[in-house]
Length: 392
Image (cartoon, rainbow, N blue to C red; front, side, top):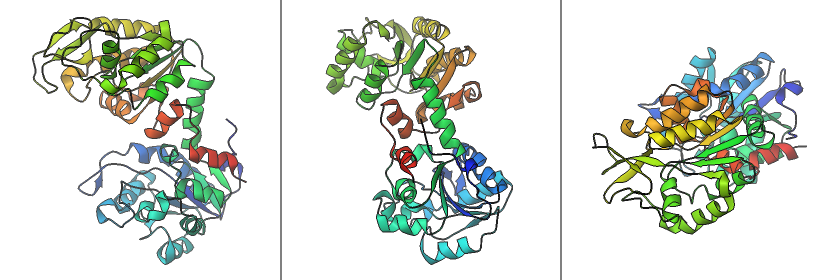
């Protein structure tokens, strides 16, 4: 994992440092509704400021389709960032052109400037060379701290890295080090838990993990498709019919590595306030849906966790946003948090579920990456990371 050195290894005092962060956070009534990604950016921003850099921050927010959209302005994020940093954060009305250049020119050592949403220009997502060159004019050094956006070959992620000396930020390094420790140099046994709804969205993850793990636990709605492929009766549970062959293929290749649920908490509708019943997975009655792992499965999964030295978890094992079906995810989270294993939690849905349960702080590492983490779990090299490796 030989990335080019971090920004700590280069003098930045008095230099304009262009930092790509992922500040793509939810807004409610023009206020930040979840500060998680902003807080994750603080170590790099504070580190650069403390070293005397002129810190110019860029990010995307939402999908404005290459046009300015006031509802997706980064201005409210700048206000929140200022509060978290306990420092003023200047704001540029654009990320390129005269507004950005003038704001950058006014910046003094250790001060912060936030540029407007890079996706207000179609050139970002297109990795347009001219747009990348305009961004690069703002800085002397480029720092990529946006792990969660590094699966995108965009101008602000890849194009700028080709035009400036490029380095990794603290968050980028911590994410890559955690993934490397969990998947590429793990303490064994290595246990992976994969949940969520569809096999089709995680087929690459499942296949890649099979080459690395000692045990693979499957939960969530995707387990129904595996069970159906084995000929089990799954009632009215969600089944991804187009993925039955893939499920059979993965199961055949996995052999004894693969562990599926034994029982399930079921209801007639996926909604709060339903009558609940527990069925063995081979005998779910018609009209009932598997919506959470059952008590025997919770014990089985907890025992597997207790025997692991490294645990990688991606995807809830039930419909965790509905309290009646969150028990399996909670019990699994508690088992992992209470184990002595090195634990890596990846994926937005999983992180949100565990955060809602108040257990995030008890995992070794909770990844900020959604799609980026998934692509790493698939064994793909992320374009933003590759750009740092290739930086001159």
